[in-house]
Length: 166
Image (cartoon, rainbow, N blue to C red; front, side):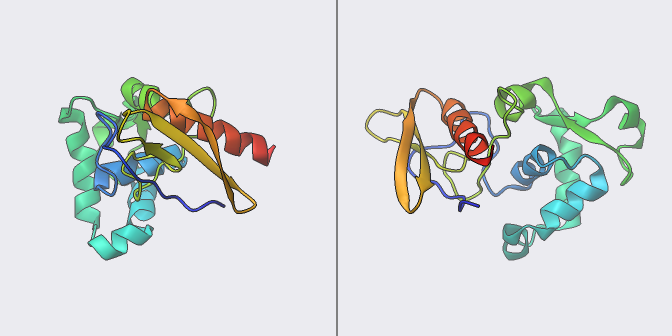
């Protein structure tokens, strides 16, 4: 598996700050975690969580505050909204979250807390402001192209990874 790293440029507009509890919740949802208990466990066990002292209260707070944010990227699933304070509550990406982070073209986007763009292997060029996706194969870095948005570059990277795994 390739190391998730990134560099250059600023964050994607609207995307939570990489490394934040909200960002990690998005990673959990994209990784297939839907119950509050599974999300809390996933986020708590991440390497960054241990070093940043992200605790259960912080994670649960991020889950609860999301419904008041614009844009909201995730929400309690309709059938469990009444139980949102319980570990059995289920969460899902909102339409906005799916549009930005969801299964773009049926692909799983690779988020990275170490990348300034928020996506693995996506870099922003300072001079043009465009985003480049890169893939490393046999120790050599290959450009996958230049894109107008970080999401488009992330889709290109996800497609290259999916193709290599097929």
